[in-house]
Amino acid sequence: MAPLLFVPNKTFAPPAPAPAPAPTPRARRRLAPRPPSAAAFFRGLFPTKPPAAKADLLRLIADQGRGLETQSDPSRLADIVSCIDALAAVSPGADTVSDAAKLSGTWRLLWTTEQEQLFIVRNAPFFRTAAGDVLQVIDVPGGALNNVITFPPSGAFVVNGEIEVQPPQRVNFRFTRAALRGNKWEVPFPPFGKGWFDTVYLDDDIRVAKDIRGDYLVVERALYSWNG
Image 1: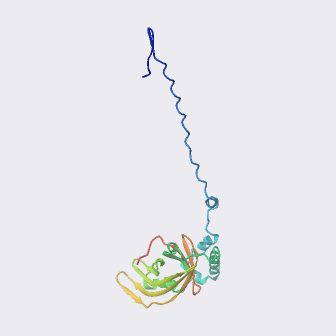
Image 2: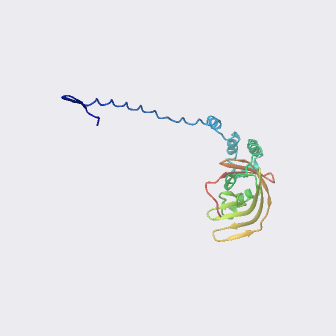
Image 3: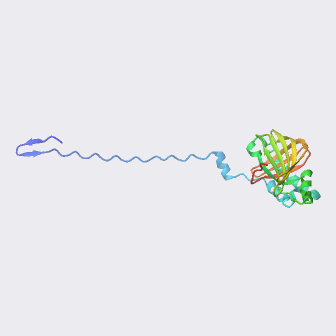
């Protein structure tokens, strides 16, 4: 309480001091968003598109019965190989085998010139069955390769092999075992074959390879994993 002042017959208190002005609130500083990097900016303007040869290749092989029809159509074969060459030229010498996550997986056959596989696919009806998915299963960390021709509902011809990747594109392989399998039976065959194949094109959807014999293979990443 402020002190009182004594005046005869009157008592006064000094006037209360004026309240201090309220502080002016400081505006909040907003951090400006970090501008995108030049690389991200241009990626947004020009998103990566699959090469035109990929669409052409998939169109040309769509009605070829995994390669059976191409055996009697040299003109179509030439067009398909031309597309494969164009895809291989997109990134010449690109490392397509070192990324285990990309190369590993279950791949389903779309088209090939490989005679042994096509022979089994063509002649499966003579054994009162039909070929289902034809698979190539690659496990880079495990050094394993399995070639599989399925015969639904439970049969399969399986060739097991070992692999060693050789960047930038080559995979060396050696087959170690083969067997025809049924639901509760298995007929073994002697292992056969060794060589290499080059993955000349690889993206998130398809892989294109050319092997030691000059055969071509076009496969897509399967929607399931084979663990037979």
